[in-house]
Length: 175
Image (cartoon, rainbow, N blue to C red; front, top):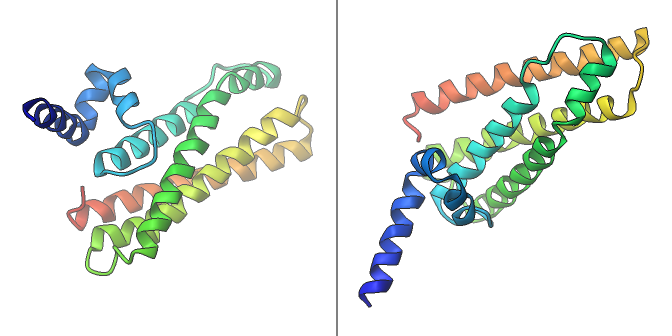
């Protein structure tokens, strides 16, 4: 019985301190949070990984012509694949929570369901759109230049909206 309590207590500590364990024991953190979202720590882990993946996709690139930029972007495909996976987990969890009406008396849950989830899904779609463009475009024509500018504008708009959401989230005292 004591062993069960100690294991459960250890899991609770790891679950509640996602950032600490991501920094000091990322493999343990990944193992504990790799399945579906079932705790707040799992949710925090999924969103942290989603943000990390998006940041890695959007990192500055080396200067160069299109073939060099394209090659560098194609190397980032694992981040896109993980971004999509984390978004899917998050969207499944949000659907269950919405169906359970968890947002009724919880303003933070309401923000998550009604604002964060659609915004994260849209941001993921825009990243997929950008990556699809990169995969299929071996040379850039003026028409392609216009298309990429439109996608980049969408990315900027999503970033602005995510920033506004984060400020709104913090103003409501959500964690």
